[in-house]
Image (cartoon, rainbow, N blue to C red; front, top):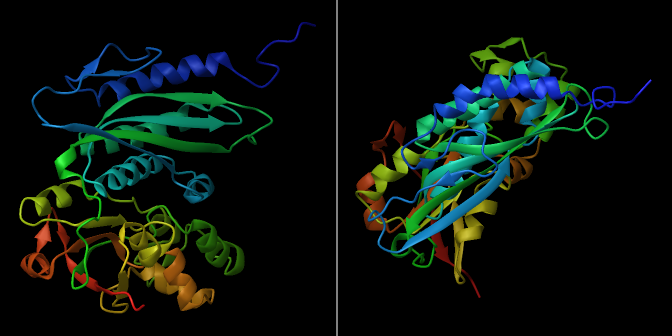
Length: 336
């Protein structure tokens, strides 16, 4: 009997069905700058004329880590795409970028069109909410490399900025203040440790209502990683932001160190802000040492901004696009 692609584990029929399911979702993210129809070999995007004086492109690629495993266990796939888009948007914000378009990569052991549709539904929602075009992507069915039921998800975002308005941390100096925008939970980092503590060791069920969380464990772990785009845009209308760090793996200190110039050090005021309850649960059930909690998790600060003390005084305690700013630390001179 002849061997075909289907018997080798790859279904072209499923791929065709997936394309039909996704076309309208992708189309919903398009704007006048997108050139051509859905499904071209390469996406084309027109840079608006006269918007930036000295335009610079910025780009970033990321994934959602083992948060995917929680989604797979819970069989809830409609939020992780939005997680991914928002995560990538926040990375652009750190250097002053406005997002333009997004491309995704979805790889699996066996293509299930309904699952992919749910994932792309989240991608499309994230793109629409951030004014981003879902310009293209790749769906790869790779039996033997991925187990049936498993998939991976990654994305690339491209944005732009005026070169003179890039945020590169160059003006950061001792005396500056670190201002935080709150997180809603783990976002997209630390899930390997969280799963080990909560699912493997404590043997909690994702469907269990946890009183201190105010919801099920699964819903708390799958809380969508928010975008801070509108908040940062509003803040930049009022103050000069010297540096921004997206608080992902590495915690506050690990990510803020990436924007800190020579001669400066961080003084973080741990305990001065309210942490989402998921962190208390992980800390207690581990138990996980405080040094490790600080090194792995955002602990309640999703985005950290560095401003002069004068500018910080203008905005601390105020709300910007629904996010209340809070002081989380200072920049001090490094001891020789």
